[in-house]
Image (cartoon, rainbow, N blue to C red; front, top):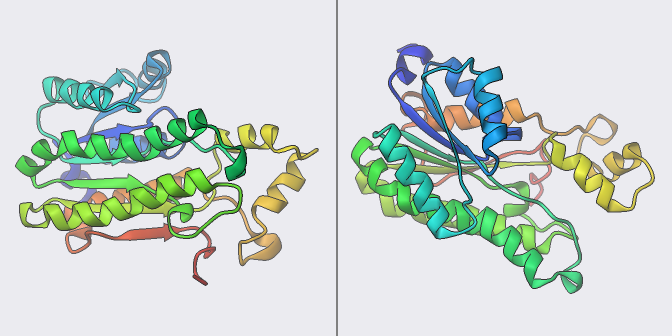
Length: 263
């Protein structure tokens, strides 16, 4: 079966689809013939993506929603069901990252990170499960290397992504008999607009020094680099495939230049 024929008439729901890994995944699945339901907080950004990248294709639907609350997740899934019906793959890419020492963390910062990264991913799964049971589909969550090991200055982010990694495993066990596979991709630092935002908040005088310090734990030394969104998207694409990854469920797979290899 060719990649194109596998994904023809398949419906993919992607959160966090306006940039980074979510957008890269959308491009990958669209190119393989799938139909997409893209969601993010900004309707204008979604409309621009549909018009500029997907040429107003009838295979792409967009819906702005806030998945930081369970009701928002339910609204997204309900909108998907009305517009597309069958759900074959749910990909949870939406996420936020805020650095900061634990003793300086406010409840607002905690809620922002946990609600988006952990609560949002969980409740997207929770409301998507009935549809996925019908299709015997797949879930791919985006965790992080910080969901596998601790990162200094990122306690809340680690808590959120560690939760994603473990609920991925638990959900895989829960849904195995239903034929629904659940896996997580655990990237290292990805080259997205978020890096520039973090640099501006970091206190470093120049971007090169910030990059050097950020990549210092990576085993490649001076050859270390950020992960490209397209690389993470390719792993998502593989895990979503029933043809390629039917035997893989409950896995949290690193794509991090080996930064977690020693743990």
